[in-house]
Amino acid sequence: MIKPGDTVRYLNAVGGGKVLRVEGKTAYVDDDGFETPFLVSDLVVVLPVGHVSQTPGQKMFDQQAYDTGRTSKRNKPEPQLPAEVTETAVSSILPEEEEFPIEETEYGDDMTVVLAFEPKNIKQLSNTQIAALLVNDSNYFLDFQLLRRVDAGWVVAASGQAAPNEVVELGAYSQQSVQTLERVVFQAIAHKKDKPFRVKMPLSASRKLDLTKFYKVHCFRPGAYFETPVIEIELLKEGRHNG
Image 1 (cartoon, rainbow, N blue to C red):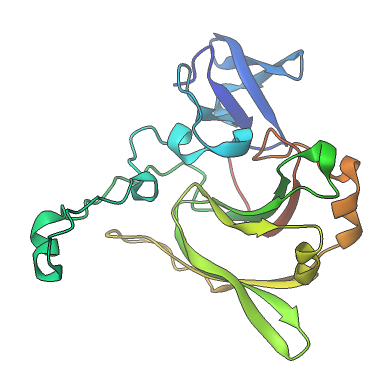
Image 2: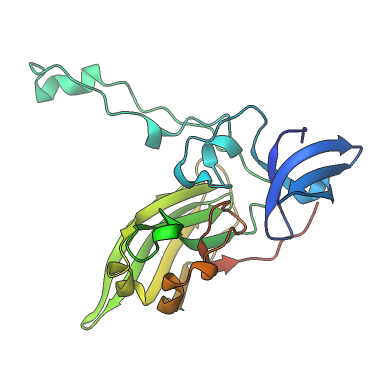
């Protein structure tokens, strides 16, 4: 249930903001200083009231905020073992990995996957680091790899698994090294764990990046998933219907 103070994003439009008040089925959202009415059914909470985002860059699509019931193993520190512990004794000391609950959204079976680039300091664009980020806006796990073009063919720039409704950091680039991503191919297999699901075709999306945009401040702007200036590149967007 959406409450005043929640940070939300729009299901069928770009952007979002903080809920000022809720009247019946209508929520009034502070969108860059403007009070805008939206149907509650057209909003999704990404930062519940009272929750402080712990992710860098103030990402609107913050998995820990969006899914407060999930404990992410990615954020747990590595256990410190005593120096005298032998390799054979490690398994008896380390706790067993626990499964964490996955919260699905009503629209998440229609997948949206986005590649985003977020500069650390937009005011020093020529020499700041630029983070490459993968947004998995879906109810599926994605086993993925990002390929980049080289003279001899293709090489893997990043690979891994993105959990449902998660933002994954793919690496940090300088203005010079980001030029190696002029041509990229994103490949992924979608699946769910421990439950039936609708089979998705393997994803293979080829994109040519306009590298001149990385030198222009006005090309970085808040988007559907970020409050900070980013360049968002859509890799997949399936049709969505309001329920």
